[in-house]
Length: 485
Length: 95
Image (cartoon, rainbow over all chains, first blue to last red):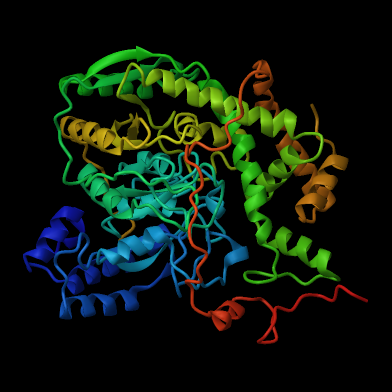
């Protein structure tokens, strides 16, 4: 079978279960394609030979009742993997080899999947274009000069380029949904507390969530089913009844009430995005959903709130990188000098900027004016959603205010980079689930995504709406394999 | 509001990140444009709003305090940039 890498996850799983394909054949196919795709720079660490060995072991004793039997999979390099280097895209963790496994990846391996490598990302997941990675930028398989989005840019690029059948990313302000939108793939940010944060390199702990990234909604649902679990090791993990998302998936969304928030029609939004949104509304109606206009009045305050809360938490989380117990160390004249040089040389510019912002807003005399203020506005933003969900079951918006931009286009203007997350950030602030599905192309032929936001713990509902709309949209990604010589 | 070089130097001390003059100037300019953007929050009156500290509306659960991990001393020490096989080594702090 020459087209193994073109198969969906569900097809691969079926082929393994029916013994039409072995794990070795499938793993070899994805390893071969990854080898030919180095130009995309999706991998930070490859684990190909171990993967092939594990695949052989699986074939010798196949456990076919697992959910991901012998399926190879690369994951974002923000997940700690025992005995496999984990860098978070940073020089400061360049040589860090975890002694433990993140709960989310452990859940994946428990269902039979096999690690093939660690994927590139913005440094400590701080970025919207994968350009802040110490290991270089990633190319979007859609077009050589385009960013793949970020921070899960290696993940989105690898799924779109079919170097891994599925993957996982993390999403603090849009880091799964925005790259999914930029690459014509599907990405789900689950409800806060759905997936354990144990073993994920921390960025902003009250916002971070891991989630699945896939070629289609069905695969995304299956992976969500695998990774979501209650975990004692994460004190914010929530014990609730989790669905069998892929088994309960249905296209019957008749009568579902879908809200359209008027505040998401932002100034300067390209007409193409507005047109896509209108088309999305029509698709939802075709599926039998009822469209209701709603208002989320505090939307415009979400980004400024985020750029206080996230850096504040980051400055605290990143205090641990001091060059003592692990990671990079620079020489210094004394202990303090060693700390200061280590952090100055070990962190990239964007990470330093955010640590400084966070330190400032938490510092004596400024805490009330910034951090406390932001927490209050965060409450208002969450109240907006609570009010809206009295009237609707889900909310439909564009995923991003534009299609993928060019490499280097926004690197000198942090604020314009931040504006990319305008539609995704409110969802993290309110702790809700949101999914981005590819919904069309702009005039340049670049993919555009629509976002469906759900009530807390209502992943099944937004997956169902996405599943129904996916069929109507019938999106085809335009990827030419230009990077394969 | 404007963040001056003196403030940048102060924050850099608190952050334990060394900055030279050139870097301080760039940081000041970036941070000023970011704070211009953040100042938008001042349009809102929030005196009577409760701050949101966590979206997870649960109380912390208690669990038995048990040792579950193995002794990984060797592997953990191996990750250190400088050690003497038993301890992490740092520059001298006591004269």
